[in-house]
Image 1 (cartoon, rainbow, N blue to C red):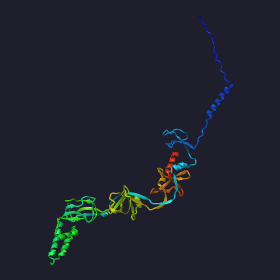
Image 2: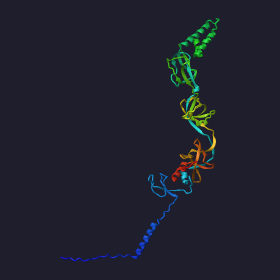
Image 3: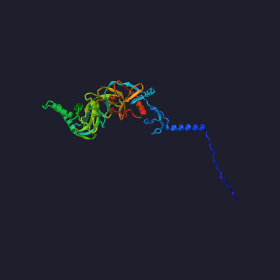
Length: 415
């Protein structure tokens, strides 16, 4: 079977486009090309920037995310009227921040330094009671350190062979004086000599008169304290033997005390050695006027400090050795510019204050300081008479400046 193949050609019919549609397409194409060659310019406001509420040092011209913490940046506006180191606040910010300013003026103030001191015994009030005879202590009337002994109180009973022999001599002299009153020997002088010996050995007039009246000597003799004070040292016990001149007790009077403190060499100029120094007693709300009695002439080479000692009265005996007190040193008053301590800002760059330049404008100024005390600071330079200084709310103004500018107003500034 035979097939015949025929050659067949198919031609696609042409598509016809309307002339108006072709014109519109040409116009759109030209507009697209023009926009690619000449991009549209975006108007940027130089007074607007975007910053992070957590990192105010971030200042971007466009909105976005903080590169440090990733938070969304917020819009902020710079004040074109504020100069270097200036900040403009709203009336509401000033009111809420409790910002107050005052015109500076000369005032008088003296420097005051408080030293930590401790009360000690006044060593000029120390007294020692020693044994006048050699013997054995049979009884001690006060056996503990810290007890108060008054003058005339019994201190100890002692057995002394030497003292007992002196008693016998005295009684014998009295007996011979009575029996041999008309003899050639002046027994009155012998009696007086024997009595003087007993006085030297520590007996008092009452004991000697009692011995003469009873004509009987006891084996032990009571010794009485000839001073008043607190026992600071007790080296004997009952049954101990003591030698002539041996220490029995050491007493300290508390009618006056020493307040001792350590002062630096730079504070010596504030010490009025011929005047008085105030001593404040902690917990007693009491101020005592003391008198300097000693300043150690030798300075510790490693610490550069020195001992200052002040004598204070102890009326009523309320003060005790070992109590902590404060020693107040004051220098003479002088004229100067003094501001409240809250008005001053300090950092590594120095010290500065804020002054008021307008109703809502404030400017930062560097200053140098001097004396400090009583919540005030002396300003040596950087201010002029008539400047209106912010005395309350300075930290809030400083924080606002850092938030807006991203840096401290003192950065890079020098006096």
